[in-house]
Image 1 (tube, rainbow over the protein chains, first blue to last red):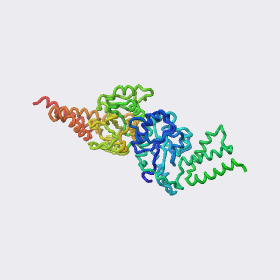
Image 2: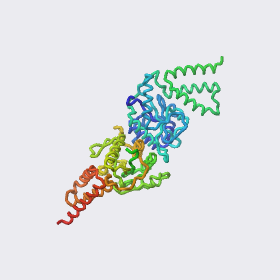
Image 3: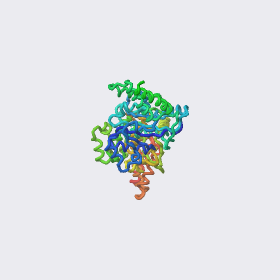
Image 4: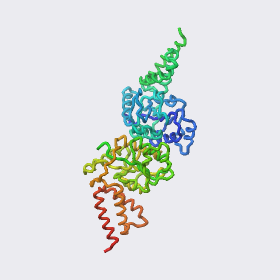
Length: 255
Length: 255
């Protein structure tokens, strides 16, 4: 594995405490990460964190987005975090210390398909109170568990960010280079282009009557997981997008 | 190395921010450490941290001491921490990720002298503003460096504690057992008994005119380092204590 094959973005989802937002940014700076996004932060907290004296460059450059999909712009790898012993999830559950090995395996698999290079990866942290929701987890390729004691499993948000950034830096998995903005056909599709494809698929399934109002939310979460697990490349997404567009058109213009 | 050969105490030296004290205790609880001491904490902060709602058992059981020597009671290994690239120190400077290996080497050396078993070890964190002073460092067998980015080297205290506790837990170097309270002659002398010996030596050096008022503080720091590097055992301390007592008596009762 190349010593720094990932460009990391830290994504705070629904963070509420300005001190935690500031602490997350500081820990990122300590360990050489620079790209921060906040999904639907509690607005007064976000303003307070960004205007705090000594707020790092990171906070000034950070983006707040309304949705998780927007925050994942350009990322082709999404990793959630949990400090508990959350179970019964559909995605890989990796102990934080094993993350470097998991990433190396992914790198090797991509390289064997000729799709190496620097990959944009997002590390997601849920809100202080509730962590990541099932819907948010359905965007994740894997869930990393910080192995905490059973008597006190829940970590402070800023400390969880610090520990994860430390592990990434410890393993040499932080790159300060800017990823080359070129689309490789056999590279993994970004979270955002997958989400576009998925929304198109949902439109078809709505139109066709497959999705029922009552069970729609739960089914959508399951289907997003199924789509993610396919490991689609940019080329796959282009082809499938065309297929779906054609089906959608036919559904709306019955012969 | 036995998987958990150390019983850890976290020592916060001159901490000022109650949130940091609380955060340090929480990180300890997350990673299975339980023994906290605070040296000369800013008193209102200490009271606030200890009386906070949800303060862990750790904070309730924590001790505040006036001096570092008191906080090191029973510890035979003292490790300082720094997040910067502090140089020109007399003691070993270890990168945090190499601490487990350093500790294993120490364990093996002790075991080869027949002085194994569970060792009480202290991990020191300096104040938010100044870190550890040179005098405080003179109590340390080694200084651990958290490898931070050159552009933003200084870590938040609570996050530094979290990262260090994570590394100890990651490596299986946290023991939840209570150390057996027996004094092994060939075991390393505790920091406190070394300090008693050292104070006795200083009295002799004062009496003999070796220590001059102007340079006394700096000389004492250097001598403490020399004493520490001798790696004295309990037996050594007992013998040297007798020697010093005799010299002291003679100086005061010139023949």
